[in-house]
Image (cartoon, rainbow, N blue to C red; front, side, top):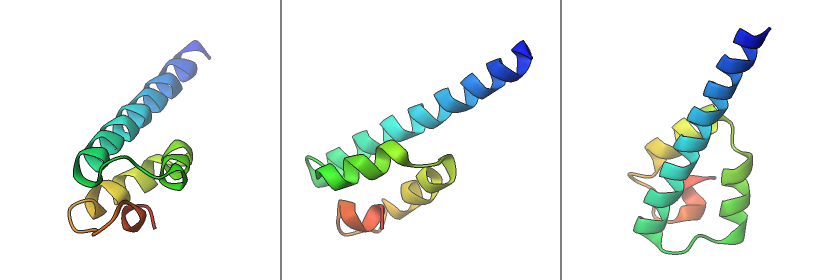
Length: 67
């Protein structure tokens, strides 16, 4: 039981690290992020974060990254 909790904590930590990195990169590229984008980042699943990280390279706006 404890082992399962540990791996879940690691997964959550990895998702939070990816979320923070994506937020940093988006802010560097687009400037301060709109509240709606911040809200979507806060609720994003790991799969969404992976997709959005790829979109960051070609999206013209922060809204387009999280669309």
